[in-house]
Image (tube, rainbow, N blue to C red; front, top):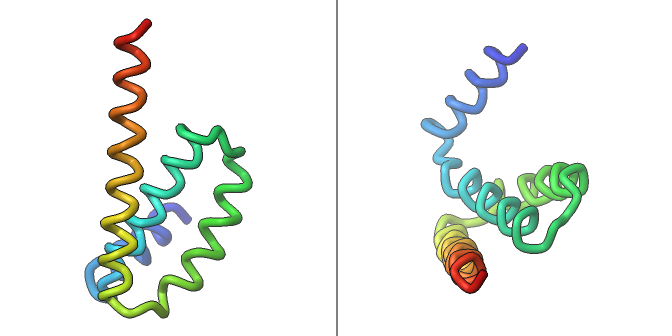
Length: 87
């Protein structure tokens, strides 16, 4: 089952140009989990809903959302480093 899932994910990533969607969801869930402390099961459910919406979005919108997710995760990283350095 894991091999089948990997094959489907790889196909969509390479042939359907869904790589932006995957990275957006990865950045958003990491920000919510590490920055906000959101429950992982809530994140799984939200990721499914977001995936269904973003699969239909135009590429230009995905690039904008991806850029914002990079800024959010980068800002979270900087804040965590500063917090650690202050201790």
